[in-house]
Length: 259
Image (spheres, rainbow, N blue to C red):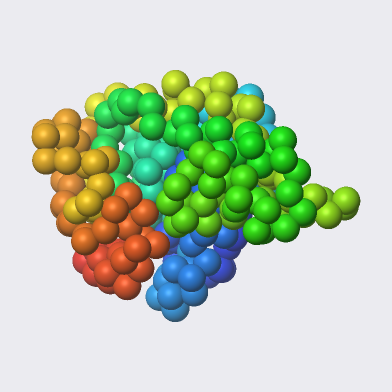
């Protein structure tokens, strides 16, 4: 049963660009990009289940998350959309493109391939659990707790976007961490659906990221045969590390496919 996703909608009548964040992200992470894209497009940024301000529920399967997204499009009266997904969100977007290709005008996948990946979030989950147990009352305390498990300050800043203050002044996690961890194995798997998405597709990858390496491209093209591959000088969070280049690539692609 699809859930009602929280979202940001810039409004408009044209075919929208729907933006789908990655694991432990939210629509809020994309606000600076939305300000730029809304000058040219209607943009809808979503909070996936167990993320941001969307409900916390059991199950993080890609088919279920794609159905959540499709239900949101139905609720907003969106017949077709350009889909942009980063990392886990890219797999959600690919799943929707395979399950309901008629609803997808084009697909933009940011630094993820349609394959299964190994585990690499153990330290991140440990850091979030440490904050949960430590009950910090300010951002400095929260960062110190995160730093017990995560060295990179940029990653800690990203994780801290999942904190919000409760009525007692304690910074709490706003994500459904139990559900995410319980279904982590599912998140590491391939996108849902079978066959190919034969529509216009752009794959943006980071030159310093291991998520879309050259040896993964045959498997990627098996699922996305029309994919244009562009490499940005960035790591996995390429939209944060190279925001201007990322926006320019997305804008150029949408101009080509949308006219």
